[in-house]
Length: 383
Ligand code: FAD
Image (cartoon, rainbow, N blue to C red; front, side, top):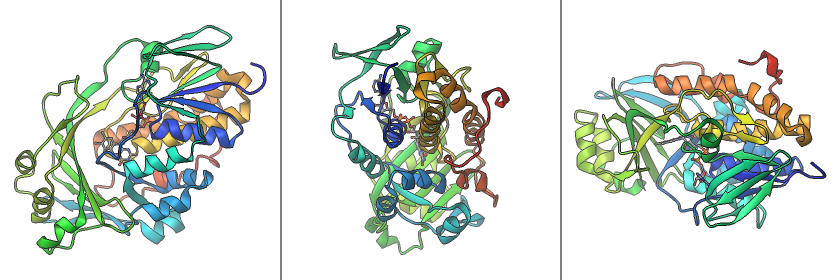
């Protein structure tokens, strides 16, 4: 590899775009190839914990994030029918002091847009669906659905749960449907005024086999969001999501607290998504190819840390390539995996079990993590 390596990133989701920005900060140049023709502001919220906000700080995006998101003082967990508080986890000023950055809840589309806008002109190529790649030894050839090709020295697969990179490296295998769906709805908070109830800034309603997570997604707290986890025996794997309805929500949450009923009454546009998983993969990289985020560790969203893990991966990959140097990419990839596998697998497991913050517990192992300062583990010592 002479001079600067040509880095191709497949997929410009939150993990891919973060990788492009972080690599650029370290002096690398990367081109993003995204299958979508454009990005829309899809109806979904996302938690951005202090572990991610430290990465936004490094990118110079922390002030814009602070101005964009809701700043909940607490995460509440409540019992499904009587609303009794099961856990009250301090966030707000406490998070800034204890974990070193803010805890926000934001609109996923706003967060993604901020990062996309931070990418330099020409770094993001839309309408480029990767269909094949070939590691030719000295370089990698990428082929896209529109018939075009590209050549790179390093290829980062940030192409999500149905990753073509993963399939190329490990063979075709569909992700596992977990038997759970997530309903999602974003709606104006003004629609709640008529109920005259004290809605929480950030709350998870729990019963034995289902839940509803609810929070504001804007700094002004004028948009509210809910996302559920509800058992459903089957899912048509040809569909990424389907429309849902208030009737379906009323049935799924029958008997839940009046505040949950009010949320259901307040919003007519609801979508339903399958919750998918994979077992931990035997390898995250091969030769010049490496993966991050949902491509290598998709998980149930029950810790609200899936995107956070993708963004942390991106930061650790940039750190490893900087420490080792891109010419020795295989050593860099081994260092990257060694410093991500344990944490990503633990988050995958806790997300699967859906126990996170149900009771009062110390979340500092997640929120207090700083990907830039955590001491590096040698590959031989990692799992
Ligand atoms: P993705 O976001 O899936 O991005 C992959 C990108 O690659 C996409 O843009 C896609 O179009 C592109 N792509 C795919 N294939 C190709 C191809 N062949 N060629 C080119 N481009 C391609 N996480 C949180 O941190 N907090 C939350 O609150 C949260 N809530 C969630 C709620 C639900 C209901 C669900 C389902 C998930 C939630 N997650 C949450 C998880 C989070 O959405 C994922 O973990 C995260 O999006 C993974 O990021 P990624 O960049 O790895 O992949």
